[in-house]
Length: 137
Image (cartoon, rainbow, N blue to C red):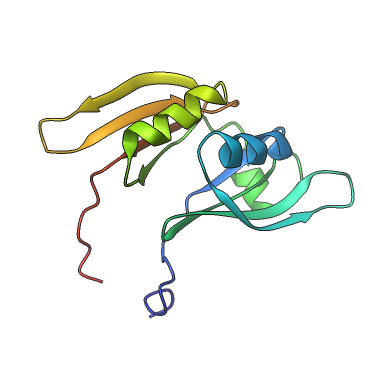
């Protein structure tokens, strides 16, 4: 099965942004993602980008490209993505220092996780916490 070996994730949340370059800046600077690849289109937009965090990744690009995915996502609302991190408080401090909108400060949850929630510059909700379920992979 594709994506199950070699440390490669098999699920990639995929988001489109009106200003994908600004989103990449915020995701890397405030939320600690690392750019794996960024491919620009001929008009100054982002055709495709991959950002990593831990052993997971997200894909993103610019809205308005006219691609099949862009057309399918037209009119869709913001999404929510959960990312497991080792040190929630340090991660939260970084996000605050970079001006991220915090929706929920670091909080201990009944199920054993410590997490916080933030909104990115285009309304997507990002949750960062210590909970990381075993997938059996």
